[in-house]
Image (tube, rainbow, N blue to C red):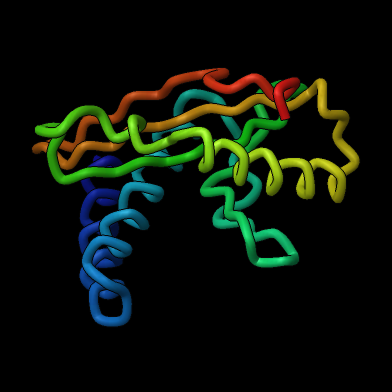
Length: 143
């Protein structure tokens, strides 16, 4: 029952966003909403969304805690997976920007770099949406 209410709220929020965001940007935000709830059900406590560096250069989609690990989550959304999985769009340049933003957040939160992890969540808008969570996909020691 609650799942249906959340889905309905997603649809309403998505239609509202389409009024002031591009359709692709609104779809990305809808994917973040879906990923947020998926991760909460998986036991990750989300503490921040769309964190931007003070310089404005990098953004982290979702940030959460799982036990004593600070988890930085990149959410990739697509209408279909016809051209491959959405996470294929997370290349070296994107990883570099994620590391920079994560370092700033971890420094502000006073979390040791050894206690961070990078995950990716794919959201494909099939009916119902398909969600895949990849844990520990980048090594923070490489940053």
